[in-house]
Length: 203
Image 1 (cartoon, helix red, strand yellow):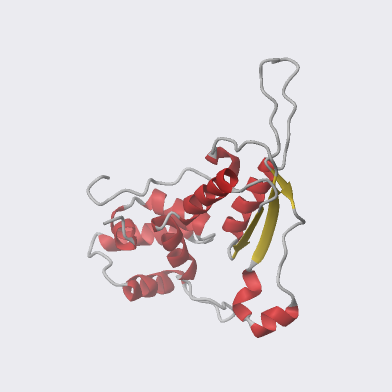
Image 2 (cartoon, helix red, strand yellow):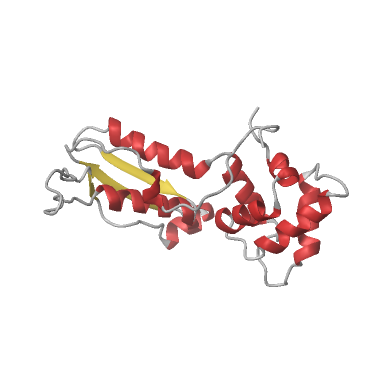
């Protein structure tokens, strides 16, 4: 079995937890929450999701204007991390580049700003062509493997009224050219270094 959210919460160092919560959850109290978790689990481990949610709510507090539970972003970060959702999305984009025929269309709907950032950077990178450097004549030209098909498309008011969950959706599309697929280089996404997703006992 793979790593579980409970494994992450009960074994990762506070610094690693803070990076996960801060980047993947965009949680502004990431450091405070991570330190609280580390201190609390020394007494007893977190065994239930409600236990963790209540601990975060008690530690951070909840303002009357807050629309979401204080633990929402932490649980989002844990889900994205454990499932390696950003890595899976990036791998799927590279795979699409390899299998799409010239003229084939890539269309991706995302529901989170981090996902949209990955898709946007991939399309921008693949739509960029370079002729090579005159200072390095042996460097091969880089051909565009996709053509952008407009910018990001978001739902209108009528669609949101009929389907409120579509509010955060964004569609991006590109058209495959005839250029050969490039090597899958994850550095183009500018993702920070996060702890590796390992099985219990490997840490």
